[in-house]
Length: 121
Image 1: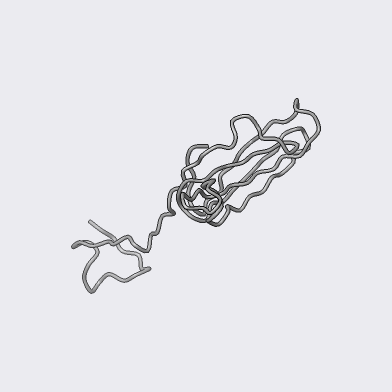
Image 2: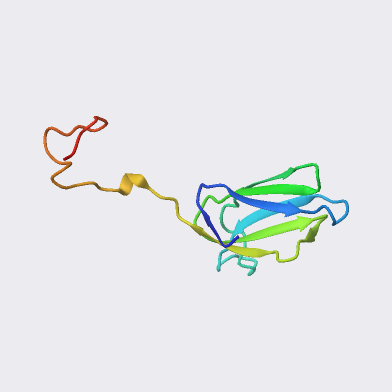
């Protein structure tokens, strides 16, 4: 629960089998030091979240952050905060392979074509 990456699914497995009846909810909100409420929450785009009831007292929660930065995860069962929550998670930027540059004598020249098989010796 310490790190996540933009655009990638992060998974939480939660066992509520001994907690009595209730529903699990998950929210992932980006922190912002300049939020109007002063709470530091809520000015960014919330992560996409989903909670699946596994029908055995356990749940699988997933979230997909849409922006990088610090997020607050809020996990509640029966409307009450689960111990250890809210929790902070650092979301790292996604990898952008379009920014990778390949160069050098083995890949430059007129005989090298994009999307063509080439042998190097």
